[in-house]
Length: 452
Image (cartoon, rainbow, N blue to C red):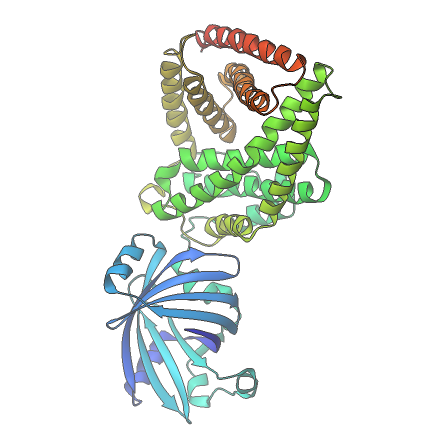
């Protein structure tokens, strides 16, 4: 069922609200629990149990007037959806009463939010909303009108964040582009959650910045920087995944992976185009083939960066870093620097052990796996400003990157040859050069691994 929800909402003094409901005739009392399974920039999806009724709701918009779509679901579906819950479950008791011919809903929250109570009034139309005056008996209960305050929506409360220290000033500085003022020194007292929030927020800011630049200029460097920051966010979320609420991490990781993957082919094509120019083939049909593919990828990326899914993903990450408890409480006091040294040492040892298993005959996929692990380790060291052995990793990663490029370029050129058998011999020349480079890079990698 689809309708427009028009309402006023007031934060109440819980003590006064409890006293009030004892002295008034209550039409009905509902026992409600609800949780959220999707957050978007302009919409949310919620599952609710109201007494013995189970309801799935999608709300769009913000403030006093929102679109609302509801449908009844089974108890079994409700329980299944609860496994996808993001944030806290809200439990409350709703008291419905009439006053001066108007129906009111007074919510007394339980458990984590037991100090909160709200009054809600729904209206049939905007005219009724604009002409409404709150009765004096209810005004006495009100702390403030929160109808337009996003911090007091049930969805925001479900994402309420625990903060040991005020990080708003750091995030505000990032939003202003003042990175020097947003830096937080890793001292013994700085816990891992605070450090992660600030650093990830910086990468998020840069991701948005370069996405906007690319849409405006179509510059390769803007796309390159966009990709780097998306990869950093993904790597650091993955490497710190034990700190995050599982459902939120899984949802974010899935969305970020789709974004990163959507830009891979464009990057591969542009790298290959530069190499083909070195072979003096700018007037060949193969060069035209690569250029046309690159232009097609440009259009796809532009659509991606303008899409609702993309903007919702970045909005969600910002929301989780600023508003909610994205983190598990078990590790809330863990010092960032102590964690960093242990994590880096453990990952460095593992990467070295796995790298030493590589052989000249190892399939390219095995090299690719190690390349990804080295990249994550390098980001981790950069994240915590730990430079010991980092130069070795950078040199090794460069060779792994070039090897991966040759692999992708060979796939592209073989696909082209299948479609264009009558093309000139220069295509064969590039293919042989790439295969030779591949063997040479494998040898270089295996040599450098011994010095890890």
